Amino acid sequence: DAKTTQPTSMDCAEGRAANLPCNHSTISGNEYVYWYRQIHSQGPQYIIHGLKNNETNEMASLIITEDRKSSTLILPHATLRDTAVYYCIVRFYSGGGADGLTFGKGTHLIIQP
Amino acid sequence: DGGITQSPKYLFRKEGQNVTLSCEQNLNHDAMYWYRQDPGQGLRLIYYSQIVNDFQKGDIAEGYSVSREKKESFPLTVTSAQKNPTAFYLCASSIGAHRRGSGNTIYFGEGSWLTVV
Image (cartoon, rainbow over all chains, first blue to last red; front, side, top):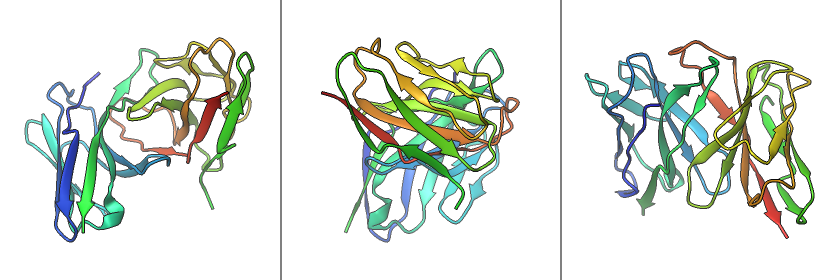
């Protein structure tokens, strides 16, 4: 399984862009990068995912390097409600053909007022 | 509203008892999953199911059991064999078992807290 490395915590000022890095140097050519976030005691919330190209949706942008060994999640205008743990995940596949998501400890993003 | 419903939100278990956590989804998803989360830790996969009447062990299946008799339901039983069951349990689902690189998204329920007393 491709593993990911994220900083344990980050701070960002409210209204500024929050840039969350992730390293996934062992990613395979057809494995996707997913981002989720989790607010304490709630289920993880899907944010965005991508394979090779940069992606954007109403929540965030995902920038994937050309060699696919790292990516950055960008929250363009952070608000206090964006304070959460952010998980960068690469899909894994079992030998039986099913799949799931392997979660690490993520990055605790704290938005400062 | 479509979504994943877990119940109960909070559950207390006495030592030696089995308890069952419910997970229902009305998203018409084929695949369902159970994860366990300990304080300050990431999620670990317990069991997953690709289709009705089929399920596979995840990374930490010992002391747990599941069933998948209906597409929309995937209950998890925490048995007395699970020595440290106090944790936050998350159920999830996705459209279907997919080929490598298909990119299907997994959606989560709101979780159930299990405490051993």
